[in-house]
Amino acid sequence: MICLFPSPLVNIQPAAMHPFASTVATPPIAAPIALAAGHPTRQGEKMIETHREFPGKVLIIGFGSIGQGVLPLLLRHFQLKPSQLHIVAADHEGSEVAAQYGIRLSVIELTEVNYRQVLTPMMDQGDFLVNVSNDVASFSLIELCQRLGAMYIDTCIEPWAGGYTDTRVSPQARSNYALREQVLTLRKDFRNGPTSVLTHGANPGLVSHFVKQALMDLADAGHQKIYPPSDRAGWAQLARHLGIRVIQVAERDFQQTHSRKQPDEFINTWSVEGFVGEGCQPAELGWGSHEQHFPHDGQRHPHGCRSAIYLNQPGAATRVRSWTPQAGAYHGFLITHSEAISIADYLTVGNGEAPEYRPTVYYAYHPCDDAVLSLHELAGRNWQLQSRVKLVKEEIEHGHDELGVLLLGHAWGGYWYGSRLDIAEARRLAPHNGATSLQVTSAVVAAMDWAIRHPNQGIVEPEDLPHDEIIAFCRPYLGELVGAYTSWNPLQGRGWIFPEEVDHTDPWQFKNFRV
Image 1 (cartoon, helix red, strand yellow):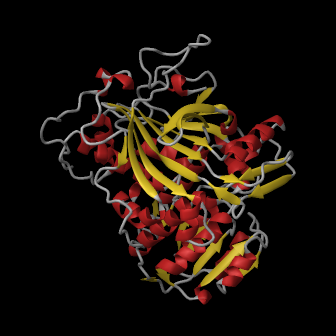
Image 2 (image 1 turned 120 degrees about the vertical axis):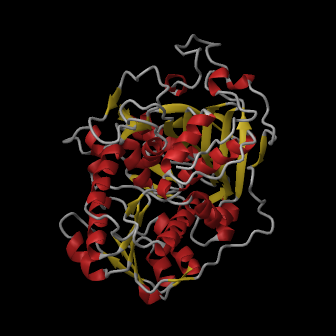
Image 3 (image 1 turned 120 degrees about the horizontal axis):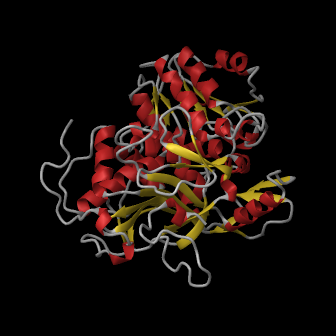
């Protein structure tokens, strides 16, 4: 393995010497908010018009907000005739969009009983299945694609309908950890099979590449002249050497509509069903090697990579403290996401159960204000979905989505790297997309482009793909790519009005982040 650190580090002190981010010095290369190191500004950027040839068929499963947003990007970046595409959806949602492009849409509800019979005649070797559905099991589709010789991509690992809230099984069994472990068992049966890219939307997906870029930015800030690591062990050692203790996927959705949420209504800027499903799963987080306070409601997994734990309560009922450049400090929901598990696993040094090093990783999500109100109402209904749901797209009047990764505990305290995309710019960049969807759909197409160039990689996760290639492809669709240093930590301003039980010796303990 290539040695990452042939000479001593320059201008980076061990993170342990800086227990409070507010005491650290300003980084030598950046103002408090500045464009990330090594990246050009948006001015003069050109869209990556690949027009890549693809002789096979593309089968899209599901046609909600993400499916509709993916379609025009597929036609922009690949040489595809309408006859090469086919959409299978559970209802007529988006049928007018499919018709606009001359794409056939078949309304068929896929189930555990009929999916093989329905899909097998639609796919041949070398085709590509794009799974952007709800309630269609990823494991089943991946296994079918591997046997048929077709490539595959999804944006999250889905169970069959009801799997997220099936009380006949334990919370552990309906966790994202369990779903990921189940899918990864297919690797042993289909080594070097057709490329199947797991969980490659914005998050999970794009944020894993943001983490790698943020690590390289921090290395540059310390004047470390290194090449990007070439393997998993190298990235883990880099994160360890930089002193990364916590990685939050920190997102704040600022979009607003002209009308407000009504009683008995759930509003969201992307899939309502998808958000409610993951919100009702157990809260999950990658569990770091520095953690000293195991949660009172926490549970470990008895098998697998052991990189994560779960809490015995829904993610939509669990709040954590976080920070983004535009929002500043905020309370977000600890929604379970696969990246919390896969990033923590990828950056582990040593044994998974008792690692020498691993950061704590989780998603801290503040959705749009109407979605927050919807979640509060959902909780009051004991997690029974409201009678009316509303996906807002054209109704959005203004606002942006701020999505990035917040790396904490290193020599300068905190560094956020990510995308700030305005709704008006998203609409200008791609039809049928918004600020929250375009970050997802561009990442889907970027990973498809990579898969077509690497068609026999078997089952891969976002961390297995080259971060620089994916970011370069997505960059024109992401608005501003921002790198921002911060002195924020979760102990700031605490306990002034009421006493709080916190660990003053180490701000980066999960107990200090949890609300």
